Image 1 (tube, rainbow, N blue to C red):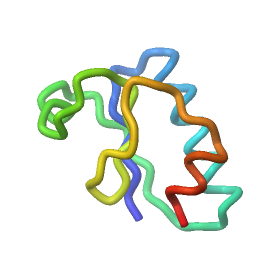
Image 2: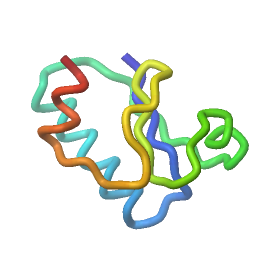
Image 3: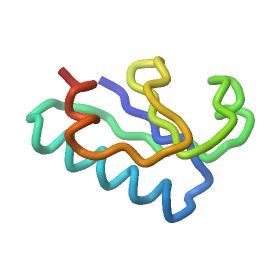
Length: 76
C-alpha cells in the first residue's frame, strides 16, 4: 500500500502526516508513506487545496486534516 501526503510542508500537512503514521501503526498494515510537495504532481491529482491524502493512487480527502480513526477506515 502506498499513501501519499500532498502538501507544501505546512503545519496542517505535518499534522496530517502524523495522523497517517498513527493510523498505519494502529491498523497493523504495511504502507509506504510518501510526502509530495511538488505543485505539478499535486495538480496532476486534481487537488486544489492541501493537505490531501492519496491511497494507492486514489484521492481520499483534500483540504482538511483527517483524524486517525477516519484514516484507519480507508486502510481496511
